[in-house]
Length: 559
Image (tube, rainbow, N blue to C red):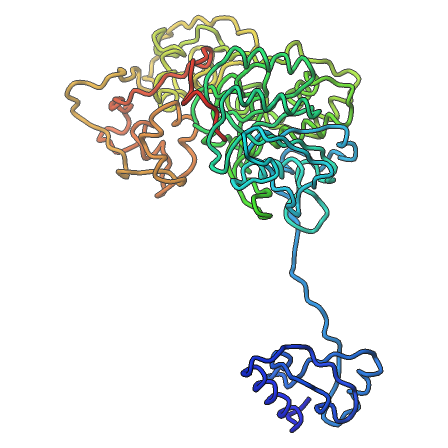
């Protein structure tokens, strides 16, 4: 309409009606010439004042055509719907593990059990109650509620629905993934007794689960757990658990039992995550940094942790296994580890295990007629290689010497012996060595005279600082911490071989830990060419071949 008297009168009536609190309704007009007389009430929201337009309702195309004949109407057109732009994204982890390359049309023959904080039943991007069942492992808490969100996040990585135009996709996208949920954590996501965890897994098995995903850990070694999980593996139940988030070489349970697959975390660049625990029990790695998945109350969230890595592996295991259910749990385990994408030190290592899980490669291997179960599915210990290695400065500088404090970070890449091996290559404590492989023959290094001085210093500082050092190294900048926050300062880097593991990453203030921290060989020293002398920190020595009796506490917590 133009600025006609009829339009202005109707607008005025609408304004008066709004002030009087009258009912708001779309106008249904008769289509006759005196249209304003048919309006019992007017609603100001039906007027687009700046556009000189009015929203009306008509019953037919004929009525719309009649409106166009009105002298004060320029044209009439349909008021169409405008929709919210929704889209579906594929989290980077799903691509990294090759999930989309394996058809998921047969997954209904497998069931994954998620032992965690519950499940947001009714989430628009998750399978519904037709394929998801559950049990309450903690008294009074419904499995179908998840006010923490941790369990729902893990379940989404396994089975978020694809092709629905919303949210994310999981390893299995069809919506047909059978899952059983056992809730063992309350809304605070704190802890559960070891006995409660065993009971939860038994509930999984009673519900018909083939794969159990446990994004939790802690406690210490318990013989009853070790025996129980061994029997479960023999009974074709594949148990998968988080390696732990403490960024050290401690064992976390249940992941570190020989019959449980221990999962480390990587980031989107396939680097080992700084928080991910590393030891000789780590079997495999998967994305665990900034993983986007389903969350509580129908929402989505990006979380980090070995908790996020674990369901990638559990989902891949179920997906691959669904292609051939005649295979045993041990064969699936072996296919996953044999086909993993090797990272870090060639072969198996403490940080990635056998490497990053690969669904397509595992499925092809499992289908290969020549595939055989590896001699044992039990993780094998790391062996220093060459055995009895020591560096070019003499037999006192062995792998055991390098395992203390930050020596790997400070000297591990230098002092190659006569056969060319550095500590970083030869010593398990420095990320080298071999896992389960026979050691190379011992190399006897003869100290050949040299006409020119070595480029590396010929001696190293003693473990204890001198009583009155003339020069003291200072962290530079003082109070430096890395890009992840103040928790990760030079004191944090000074223990558990962290300088070697992470010292060249997470730059802050234009410096990495290896540049800023004395413990990592950096800092401010008047003699920068000399090795640091302030090794007063006494970090724990990694002892991956001996299980500690307790780690952190007696009860596992969510990772």
